Length: 431
Image 1 (spheres, rainbow, N blue to C red):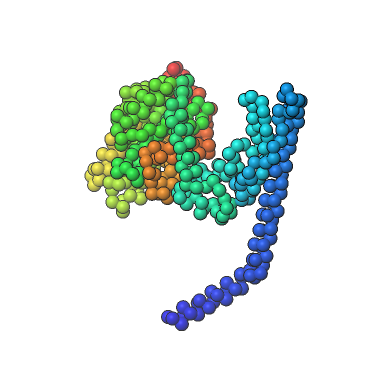
Image 2 (cartoon, rainbow, N blue to C red):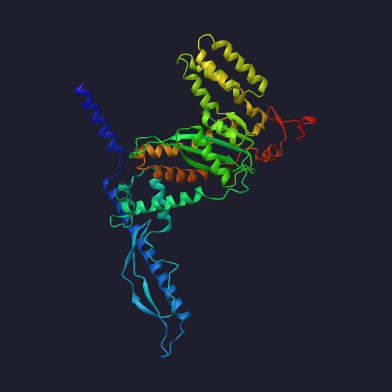
């Protein structure tokens, strides 16, 4: 065995030498790459320095005629400010900004090219929060970015990241108080997501609502710090939305079987139709059955909500109960419990079925949130968790697609009736 291992190792080494690039070629590529970066950095430095000098020159020339009683100019050049490094994607660039002496009352020069206290380019200011949201911890930022920006990079200390998170918290607080007057959501998706907090023994449940507007766009309606998925927490959430102007009843609400949300919804928006999430329902049913039976049971459940008509779906429903009631009564009770709300989607346009049968708009978007909390082993506080959830959700919102067949939403809003996904014609469809 030892002989064979040694022989295989020799073969691997031979193959690696055969296909590996010569060492001098690798060094040459590295040298060429470094030289190119230096040329680009030097060019960027000269262009930036020239732009700043030109900006100051034009400012001074515009004020050239302004003089005091002694016939001396009020605005003049006054050397340079101390040099400072501007952090860019090419690494730090050292700049000497011209100083302007302005003797006019209440007037001072402010550069639009290089604003006061500017230390990073806009692209890096966007990169840093993106890396943080994707799982880079605060203390690891200097090490993580030093290879990209150089060892002398500044402005990446944990304190700067902490200040950035404070800005996010203020942004989140402002967003929570925004006016919702006139907002209308045809469909809403609701779910509760649990997180671990390092400095808190309790696991908070973040309540999330996403809505579809009349033009088919999905929006993040709200995020609420709840106590489990209780009726009280959901009621506080919905009442807060109504107090800020969200008073138009949605046509349909989609959620899992959590009783808290549905009880609160019936009190706050009693006219809203209800649709249980088939993904959650499938998981709950299969959890009450042995693994050997689950594949066939799952196929029969899929047949229910993928049937072209409600009649065919109910036939598949009865077939499932006929097969499994005797042996697995718990699974069948789980299915029967929400029968009235599992097939509501058949009363809405068929183009929307894929969107309203499940809470997938929330589940898929917040997979990134869960990944980030696993990477950092949870946030340190509740407000940090809420802020992170808000920022990640807003980033995900930019990539959300419009509902397929969104033109049909106007018919739903108008109260036009649908049966098996198709518009009902005739007297039955009089709103």
